[in-house]
Length: 236
Image (cartoon, rainbow, N blue to C red; front, side, top):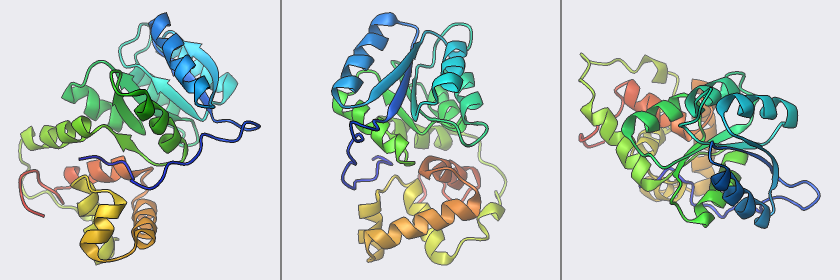
């Protein structure tokens, strides 16, 4: 199960205007490895940061499109650095990369504004895809992370009749699509389930994100669970 849109990947960028990436990790060898993979894929690595504070400083100076952000770093951790980078709404996209896939990290990283969350042992193709998807304004989660996110909500104490008032502005079809998004379905799967085209699904997704004031599909999924519109373990 994944929130990754199954449409074809865009190219990295033209050689004249490559996507700009900042790598933030407290291990020099890890940063060097990421740089090699990214530059070989046509991206421009505009800086390396050894902690969250350096990441903020370099991001302000270099204006990257995407920041690859480790979570556990000295001085300022990746979660707080992500919050500050995404607070204004016009900053770079952040993809969290970590060796840890603990539930608290997953949820907090997404709440902090991350556009993607991948484990460091993921294939290099997944890393490249994550940068491309995040730069395009979409969101990507590893399948194991999507599962843990849903399981985390399943373990939370049930609230007394949560009222999904924030969803009142959605049309019935937009609400249907939101519920399917929350179940981890891709645009292709949603189109098949609702017997519509993928283009129609993408249009509805864009409309519901705009109505709800959300940045991407991940925020939509979180909202669906937080409002009680979707309850883990209960059929849609």
